[in-house]
Length: 193
Image 1 (tube, rainbow, N blue to C red):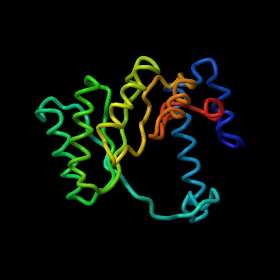
Image 2 (tube, rainbow, N blue to C red):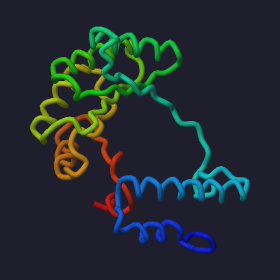
Image 3 (cartoon, rainbow, N blue to C red):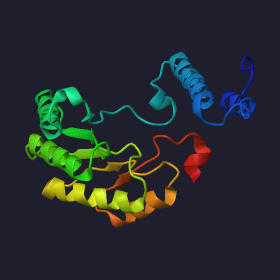
Image 4 (cartoon, rainbow, N blue to C red):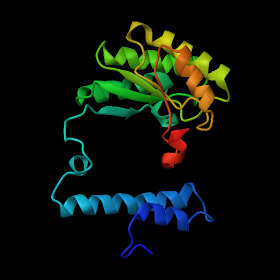
């Protein structure tokens, strides 16, 4: 289907409309699409970012973790240990999970993470679509903002279902903390919404 064809992505997408415009079919299309872009850049002996009109530059990395692992012991202490470990290995920015415990228990984890950071860096929270509705997400975010104190939060990621565009927009409007979403969205069509 692709040999000798132009507009590979469009062709693959059209051919898979009946089997799924999301999920595994689209992930397979994405894998082929990324490989083709990578191949095109390698043939031009260019970094892909440059080929697409951007630039190669250093970007800060953050340590992502704070998962719920029962074997790590008490939740807040486990996050504190993990953040300290990451700080000792050069990270100043961090992201931890929230939404897997009660709001109070997660707020204790936020406090522990902020404490472990020792006044340096930024802390983001990733809820992985954990909250049932806008009210619950707003309540959780405000409790987490309070737990972070003067350090504040870097961002609050995916507090609601990915399909709750209005809820995410309203949260972004009402909170001091930026709201991030879109990780689960697929194709330019969804991103236009």
